[in-house]
Length: 152
Image (cartoon, rainbow, N blue to C red; front, side):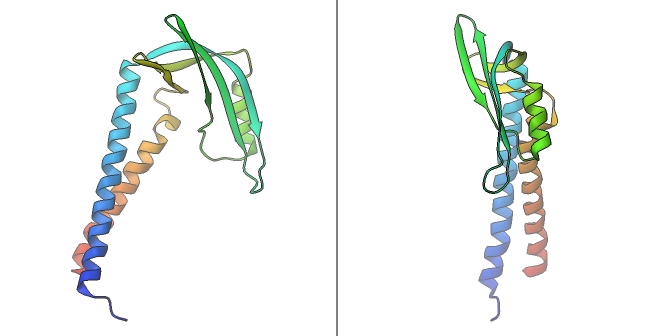
């Protein structure tokens, strides 16, 4: 079965458009996080609970850390659990880093103090998702560009 010209055009445009959309999404997410670092408030939080869970049926471990903080006259709490993937030892280190009762900095939005980041700052984990989106967007855009040259 031969690939038609229209199928090649759709393939090229799919790679280009998806790449640009993902790239722009990554740039927007990175920009929002950088703005948050510049304009949000750092407050002292207290770890309420730090739990290692797993393994589940697929052998995957996760960890959650619940933190309470005060901003102005109100108290807030949030369960943080977006640590990415890793093995049991990595999640054990996370739980050990946040023992219940310990103090930890929280980055919260002054306009909505319930919106907050744990481990915020110029750290690799804070920029992992936007960086991944930017890299994937660039990859798909470049592939689309070269496919355009090869297929059309």
